[in-house]
Image 1 (spheres, rainbow, N blue to C red):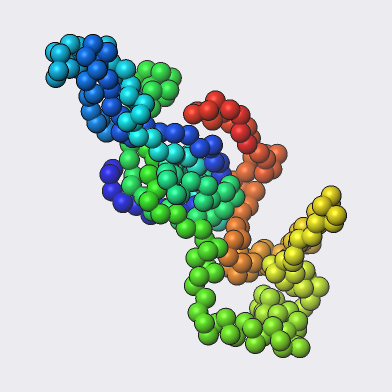
Image 2 (image 1 turned 90 degrees about the horizontal axis):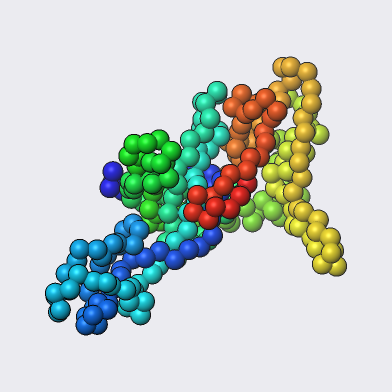
Length: 270
């Protein structure tokens, strides 16, 4: 606890942006003396029992809104990548706190790497349910990087020049076809469909009324032992955002969406 950690996973949920109390001051209602500043890491501190240094009264106190400092924060849920989870075990998840300029930097469905401090906090809602003190853990992020940005930034100048040179090659279509799962003989139509799906295209808006997406879906059907899984494994190792998953970790009805109630906002979210 309290150490700097680095975790990676897929963002499954993102909350709205809320103000969080960081530094607060209080006014004494008897003499107007300003108490503080008080650094806040959890809920608003209670001032009962505090003695005013000016009039020696024990309150009451009111929050000084003019000298109180707030910061925006956002909660996201980070889940283990399905491709890294052993068969039969459900992916684990962890809450990540985003503050300041890290807010709205990630979206659900993106695979990210988070560097932050692993902290613990008292969970009153779980305490009421279980009947004994329960502490929840979360990661307070200091840096967030999307996996696609890391892969894009890892290209060197020589690699970019090589890509531009290959783009002008008239035989580039056949070269791409031969590079898709080269250990599998034949299946040129399947390889071309996989290549088109990996490269994608440009989405189009027809008269701002109808949107045509740029990527396609590929469904492979066949008898056992016809290299269907090998094609999937090739795409997983080649495409930067590909995730390999099986039905062993899913429910009996398949891969489904579920509805959860957000603990902070009490809203229902997917």
